[in-house]
Length: 497
Image 1: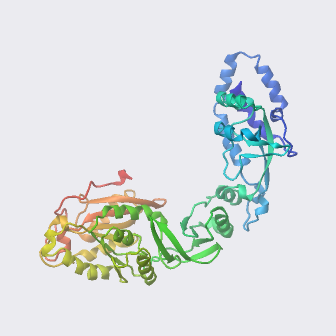
Image 2 (image 1 turned 90 degrees about the horizontal axis):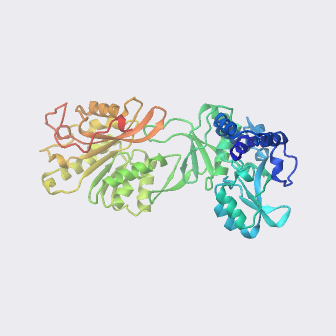
């Protein structure tokens, strides 16, 4: 019987709420259902079992339907392009339990399952009919009648001398009670994608809106500010990243126009003008992954350093760091952030084209690092190339970069080169493109790491390999199918993704 009550209890939602008066739980059940239940009491048990089977899939379907109605904004907000917070007022009927205020704390620990779990709504409020009493909000999808309580819950209620009778309460919801996703789903055309996520860059919410969302862009921006503490500006990217300086044009959707921001990532602080440099908070894990590969004393060449998310952690790890970026603004903030994190004496900063950096400062340092005394060296050399749209093209700068006698293969520089791929087999695609530029196979001597999914059918990957001596040194014979030296690690393919 208890199960059957739960199956049919959703019908009580259809009752029209006419006042904020608290009524007894008998009012939650329509008289026709009460009559049916009385008849079912006289029906053999086998019939009830059959009914359970027939209605076994209904609760989930009906609950999903009620979810979209009960705690969603009113339908009148559909199509709103200028935010009107007052239009989101709505009244819903919530089951409640009337208790004495002195037992609330003890009771709440035992009613975790039954209590309402809705952010922004108090689970316990003062009883408007009894100043010494309290109302515990219950889950409207679980709690219908006394029979909805579990045996252990009823036992606690009895111990605390609480009447298990469920009442109903008319709860007023406002704009503040709805989540950003619920607001946008109610406003945007039905069936359209809803933007509720964004990249947070300090006080800035960075969105990438689609065409169908643009008529609502200012509303979306304001909702992001309203619903995310600390966000005071919402911006939208309005063109692709400039592959020269790696920044993009943006428009302020709502809030202040201040693009000077400060972020914390992996315990380091970075300050910059977000409108003039590249910063992606989704790369935090990748910055940490590369840093963990380094050991104190290692040498790191950061070819496209940005504002320092690879260079600064490496310097803090007591590595020798050479950091470069072509963008004058990135170069300025890289210097600033090195000082801010107190590693300015450990990082040599350059403002060069990536190819000029590799064939200039990197070449000079490698000639020393891999010279006659290199056999005594115990540290590794790493080269990070984080410019996914074009970095693979810069691999050609390693061809015949050094002169003299090749060093031991275990001392050769390790490259971490980033790239995008839309191929069905992204790992193999990146390996083949890198091999084409270098003129040598990397299949058995490289690893490919999936960094993140950028867009549908577009991945960002990092291929890691040790530069073959036959490529790095002049006057060397290149075996296009293989090269000397042990593999860095097991090759990863698209199956690993």
